[in-house]
Image (cartoon, rainbow, N blue to C red; front, side):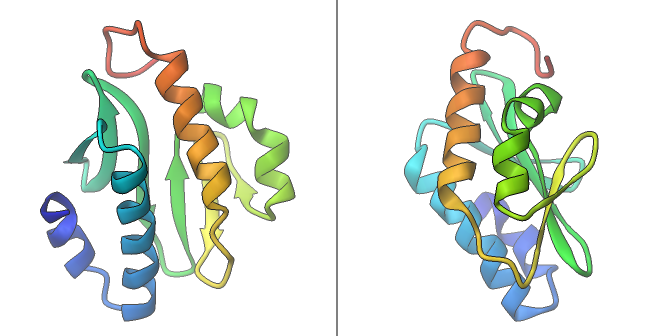
Length: 122
């Protein structure tokens, strides 16, 4: 996971860093075919040159950005998990449990839905 090490090292709160690392490691292990990249200072995963999911960190939460199509598709599941949603992302508070099943489903959806895409964004 050396692609993300500089990003992780910049997260000062060690608990937050550990939680973010746990998410990134989970995705890297569960989806080894995805490319790990840093773009716009965000760790992200891509597939055949198309965007799949990205993350960012803030004081009170980490943000998950899977694109609007996936957010809309999983809107109810995101709400059921207790996460706050905005137009282009949802937030997981640092104190929240991580719903890895939901993250996996979102990633699987994007991989399948974008398998024939030739552009980075939808």
